Image (tube, rainbow, N blue to C red; front, side):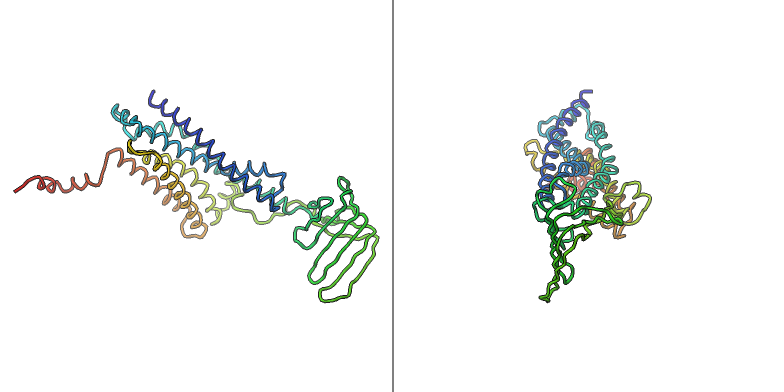
Amino acid sequence: MLFQSSMRKELARSFGATLVVLITIIMTIVLIRTLGQAARGSISPQDVLLIMAYSALGRLPIILTLSLFISMVSTLSRMYKDSEMVVWFASGRSLIVFLGPLFRFAWPVLLVIALASLFVWPWSNEQTMEMRQRYEQRGDLDRIAPGEFQESSNGSRVFFIDRSSEGRSGSNNIFISSTDKNKSAITTARAGRIEVMGGSQMLILENGQRLENSTGNSAMKISDFEEYGVRTGSSSALGPGERDLSTISTRNLIKSPTRGNLAELAWRIGLALSAINFVLIALALAAVNPRAGRSSNLIFVMFTFVVYSNLMSIGQGWVSLGLVSFTGLLLMMHGGVFIVSMAWLAKRHLNWSLRDMIRRRTPGLSVGAQVQP
C-alpha cells in the first residue's frame, strides 16, 4: 500500500541519517576518552582501536534506541508540518493506524536492541575489562622500554636498561632503584636474564653491586654479587578477582538472582522495553502546529530520552538496595510509561480536551450563558 510504503521509505532515510550522525558523535567522544586513558597509562596504546570498537558495541542499544526515537519524531513532525497528516486523516486514517507501519519498520531494530542489551553488552564489557586488567597486571619488565626509566606497577621501583639491549632476550647495563618501607636500595648489574621460579617472574642479575640505606641512618651497606634475583611479577595471567556486574552474562545473572545481579538484569531488560515505549511516545509526541517549527519537538525528544534513561539508572539503584523488587520495577516504570503513552495516544486519537470534558459534565452552564435576561 502507498500509505505503508511511503512511511517505511521516509523512516528508513531518516533513521539511517540519524544513526550515522550519532555513531560519528559517539565514536568521537569514545576516541577522545580512550586516547586520554592511553596517555595516562590505563590501557595499552596498541588496544585503542579494539577498545573503541568494544565501546561502540556496548553502546549500540542506546544508539539504536535514540536513532529510532529521533527518526520517528522527525518524520511524523514533518508530515504534520506539511499537512500530510491532514490528508491521511481525511482519507479515513486515524492516529492509531500509524502504529502498524511504525512497528513494522521498527521490529528488526527492536530485536537488535534486545539482543545487544542482553548479550553484546556484557560480552563487550568483559573484553574491555580483560584488556585493561591484562595491561595493568603485566609484569614490571613488560613495562620497560630500553633507554627509558620506567616505574613499576606499585611505584616502589624504577628500572632502566641499556638501549643496546633492545630486541634481545637478555639485558645489559641494568639499573634498579627501589624503596621498601624504611629502606632504599640502588642495584646495578652488567647483565641480566628473565627466569620463572615457583610461578613468579624473576630477573636474575649478574656481576653487579647493591647499595642499601635505611631512613634516618647515614650508614650505607655496599654489596657485590655475581648473581642476584629480583622478583618482578607473577607469570600467571589474570586472577579471578571480583567481576564487574556489567561483564556478567545474562544467563549467569538469572542463575544467581542476587540484588546486584537483578539490578543489572533489570537495566538490560529495561533497554529493550524502553525502546518499545519510545515508539509509542514518538507517535504521541510528534503532533506539531504547522505554523511552528520542529526544533521544540526535537528538544523535548532529548529531554524525554534523558529523563527516561536517568529513571532507569535510579531504578537499577533501587533494586540493588532492595527498595523495590525486580518485577515491581519493570511493572511500575516501564509498564507505567506504556500506560501513560497509550492514554496520550487515546487522547490525541479521540481529540479529548479538558475544556470539552468540563462542558460535557456541566451542559447547563453553556446554555445559561447564552440566555440574556
